[in-house]
Length: 185
Image (cartoon, rainbow, N blue to C red; front, side):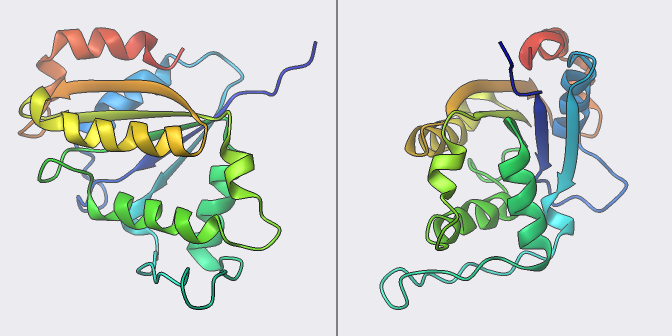
């Protein structure tokens, strides 16, 4: 029986300046290190891509052109992945703006003629790796992302949360570091 090789897309969503990964990315890299040999990993930093604001054309034009530039790169990477991991700190009890922009573009991709975005997303696994000062304050973000997965018939792989805050703080969260070793398996 043939199986599709595993390809994990990590989308870092922090608005940190380049070269200064935060706690969520550090925790995600620990999890990624435990992926089986032969697994493909793609890492994209949403904040460093040229993602235009989403314009809702559903009730006027009704469809969208095929994306270009960084949006095409992002769409191609999304469709090529078997697993998608949002690497997302909690910003104001929710997702960072770059991730919201990416998710808004899903609405357009659903309406690109001939793309079949919803059908291609079905069966992929969506997960989130996040840090914040308080786990309870991350729950609204986790619920929102779980509902996105559910809408597209994706598998919800759950969330890995670590106690963050100051740079490097998550490294002291021994429970999160231990969970990272098996979270993506």
